[in-house]
Image 1 (cartoon, one colour):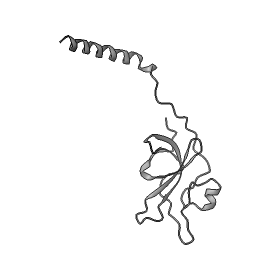
Image 2 (cartoon, helix red, strand yellow):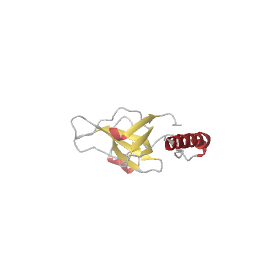
Image 3 (tube, helix red, strand yellow):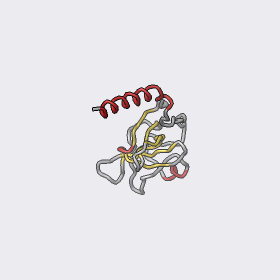
Image 4 (cartoon, rainbow, N blue to C red):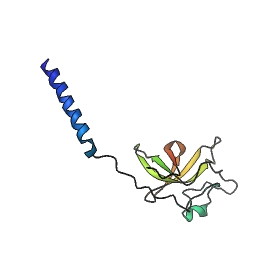
Amino acid sequence: MQTVGYTAKLGRMIGKWFKRYKRHLPSQPRISWPGLPQNGFIAGRSARVGDVDRGKAVFSQRTHDSSAKAYPIVIPQYAFWKDEGGSAVPVIVVQAECHIAEADGKPIIGLRTLDGESIVASLDEVEFLGTDLPI
């Protein structure tokens, strides 16, 4: 019985410590989101190879006889991309198109990380945040 009392007392002490010092514990680093770009993205149409070459698009699905349809979301906007390890990476959505080769037209999303890396992602890898600067 003495062990139970000691364990309970220790639990209360730890709880009080966390309440008192939790503001000093390390937290997630704050994300320094930039403003949304005024150019360098594709909205309302599918990208051409020249758009990719000029840095306006991340990918192009156009072929000689067909092109993809734009996927109807607001571009540009803020988002998180889930990387292979499951981490949420802050990104800007710069392009969204329906998949050209699949009958159901699953969307493909073009992203840019905050340091400028280009990423092609599927819709389920992206959490859209909208156009308001995330807090």
